[in-house]
Length: 119
Length: 493
Image 1 (cartoon, each protein chain N blue to C red):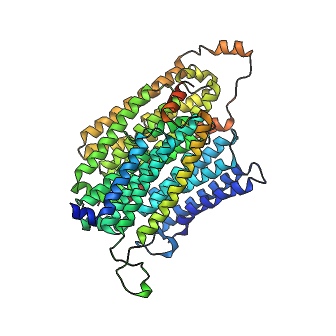
Image 2: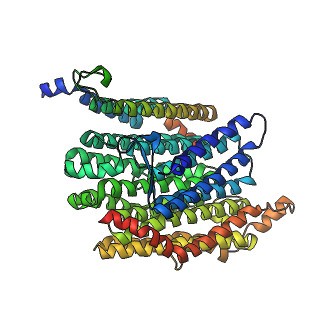
Image 3: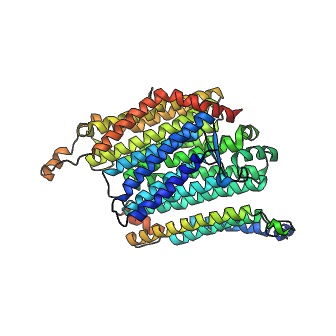
């Protein structure tokens, strides 16, 4: 088991990040913390992709220079795209949170649902 | 090779930039630009249909990188029909929006971005590309829901953003599992590689489960539907029409594509429990969606829960893995979009006359708004599945397919759902036609005989056209079925 953790620690980190992120989204009642949780959750998935394409001792795939083994570049490109998507989502989410705060004067989910019932 | 496929996505993206730029110098640029862009989009769909008629299934390698290494776009009769549906519904929304014209230019940019994202989902042949289009669709939808100035819309939009992003991320994670076990992302290539790796590999099973949970969130299947009723109810009427008709439809199409083009029916026979689980989720959606719909008093919310139930029907047609059921499911996918668009437009128009979206507001409304009420009734009965409307053709084929493959429970649930659908529509139609308007005299007295707010002509025209379409599509559905049966048959052999 220890050996597994030693060689596959990034996978353990991926599972931990995804778990922590989801927990934060579900358990935290502060909207900003929920969005932070969402980001941690996504970073976990990014780590999973990057780890999947990595080889210990691998070099960047510049084939003309010779030498190998190469690290797979495709997951890195995919995750670059996914990071852009994640940034846009965070921006839209934060814009919505600003608007909610202006309207209701709170960032707490429980206070917010009470305010909506009393409207 | 067909560049039309790439243009179907590129054109709306580029057009989306124009209203933002032009808006500085010309105030009402948004509507005109969006309308012209959507008409061009429809012209591209016609071009695509012509190419498909000559060459059969067309494909396009993005950036000239040959698939499976590059991204592939694929067009067949199913995707062409659905992209056509996207342009037509967008045109309808624009015409419906015209007379309410209080939207900013950014609204039209978002609408065009949504059109681009939806078109992308329908034509892509690559799993990661599908993720990107799902997120473009999602981002545009969150922004559109929030364009309604009410504070509740912002909360509904944020809820949708949190749930929708987790769904899309789980989909991405599932794609990662498939990529790690096969090294490819192209759908056609994956279907062969998956068979070589072996369908019972834990990586592939995990990938399937994660992808289906992710797409289930986007389709709003029970119990992943929690974002959907708020988003539909709190959006402005024109946004509700667009997202109710198209967004879940695109996700349901993605479930169909992934099940048949990537995992193929051999996966279903190797791991029957995976598809059985999907069937159970879909059956729960059908029953509970209808039950929740019966419990609602707000009509927009009722129609939202009705969508949960109807998408259960579409998914069950996919998950029983039977040619007839799959054809029925695709017919219902298109039919539902037409009928739901019509129903939401009718409710939007009726709310102007009635002054609200509540069930009790609709008492005796048929006397005051006869065309809208009649249109609503026709569309409601079409969705219930009264022959010869399109709702009947879809449900009939799903039931027939389920019986053919021996899934009696599915057949019984689908038939029962028809009765439940009738139950929630019957109480609306009863209020409309058989209850006398109790408040009208009081209102007239207190308002001092103020003129009644009038429903714009376009709204009445659109409801009439869509009501007519929902019945006549049922009659021409045979041609659509004839066009898609060879494609469906190709997946099943």
